[in-house]
Amino acid sequence: MISIPRINIIKPVIKWDILIPTLVFTFIIAEMLFAMNYIDYHLYSILLVYGVLTGIISFVVNWLLDFVD
Image: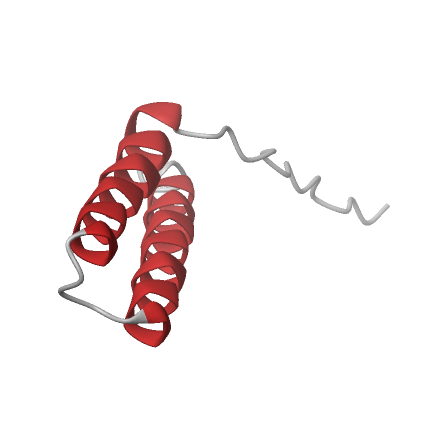
């Protein structure tokens, strides 16, 4: 009889210790620069999108590193 190997799918565990500081730090920097009129609204929104994307990428990389032992 042919046995089919089971595939263990690991659910992603959110690494809050990496994701939250990345988002908060980027948000604080963008707010400070915007409040001091160093950047305009377009650059402000680009910085916020950059912070969110950086947080998501770091989350995915750390989740993929869980597969490597």
